[in-house]
Every structure is written in C-alpha cells, then in structure tokens.
Length: 140
Image 1 (spheres, rainbow, N blue to C red):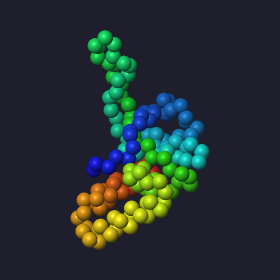
Image 2 (cartoon, rainbow, N blue to C red):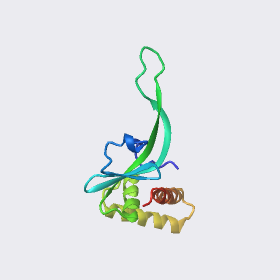
Image 3 (cartoon, rainbow, N blue to C red):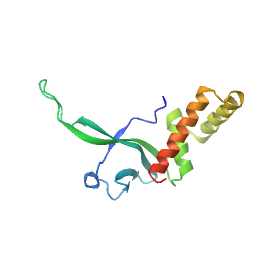
Image 4 (cartoon, rainbow, N blue to C red):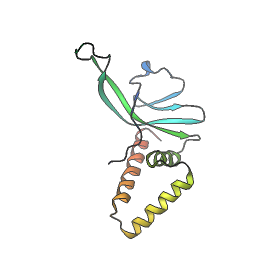
C-alpha cells in the first residue's frame, strides 16, 4: 500500500518510560492512546526498530537502542470507531472537513460502479481495511 497515514513516531515501550501515565491508555503492553483534552491520539501499527541512542562522534558507530514506533492518528472527541476511520481518511487524503470526505467517497463510489478494479478504489479499500484492523488491534 502506497498510502501513508503520517510520519511514524516513537511511543513509550513500557509503562515506566511513559511520562504521561495519567493520560495514556495501555493495552496488551502497548501505548495505544494519549488523551489530549478535546482530542485523542491513537497509535496504530506498533513495531520495534533499532534507533541510534546517541549521535556518533568522529566516525564512530552510534550506540543503538530498541524503540517502539507507531503511526499517530489524532481524533476529535468523543472517540468512536467511525470517527477514527474518518480521521484516518482525512489525514491520508489531506481533507479538511466532512464535506471533502463525502466528496471523496462519492467520487470513489462512481469509480467503483464504472470499474470495480480501479486502482484508486482498490487502494482506498485496502487502506480502510488496514485502519479497521489496526483499530481492532488496539481495542477501538
């Protein structure tokens, strides 16, 4: 899938690393959400990577550490599964409001009727299915 939600960010790997414990939600050992007041940031597609711990000096190799990375998805409260899917669609397609989402979906529906194998339609369906699966993984 060529669609990218946003840049990935590092999330706390353990609760002891979490500096916002009173505002975060943990599920199955993963930091899955951060309450920001009027919004909630969900973290999707957690994966571990090795990242430089400190900058390398004078040609020496940088010390590495394990980090947990995820895609952040900011959703306006109240959080619902549909609101999260809508927020993901808006983020990926650069949409600013519900009218633009409706317009995109109407366009995709027309393309699907004309050609169910249209690449844009298929890519959108794959993206929405990925978002739904990730939301299920974090309990939304």
